Length: 237
Image (cartoon, rainbow, N blue to C red; front, side, top):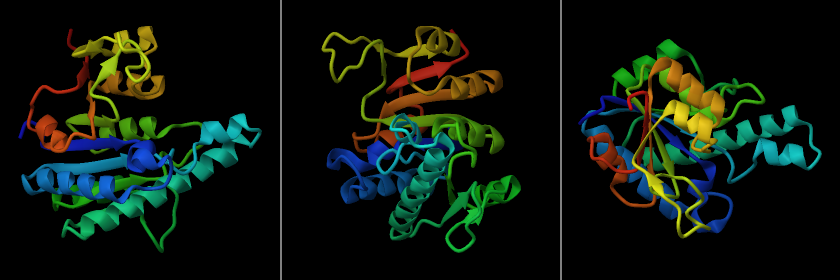
């Protein structure tokens, strides 16, 4: 395998599938099977999940809700998704720990970096819930932060499309796909692969980002083993 330790970033919307909201059992089952596959090959896996299938903090704020309150609701939504994924993984026999940036001892461990590293070294999948624990920061930023803290080799951002395009490929048939970009190009072009805070954090610490299609079964194994799929965001270019 090309990567020994990865940080897998999943959007909440990806878990919803065609349901439009909530968690799709079929997608959850497929995702758990793919994570199990790479974990059995010795890859250490950390996961950050968004909460957009349940509540988006920014969306709530645009409807007049207090932004801090709305963001805290979004953090709790990520905990729900994390517990759902933990259950799916453990039903496959994969040892999993949910670590929350907001303390809730009855359902998740508090996030402690050294403990998270130890879980990974013991072969447990670690799901980082509740974002950074702070409002005004997205789960993209949480993924970049956790990837740096656990010394991940790469961030794998799983989406509904097969890479980064110059336009939305869902609405523009002439959208052009990029095979590789550097961080500065992503920031200058305003490409919404991750928010600017997350991209800058990855740039400063030279952690590559690979954006790929989650809906194609086996893609997590392919990208972890070094197969060139999706779009690579890197310092080199």
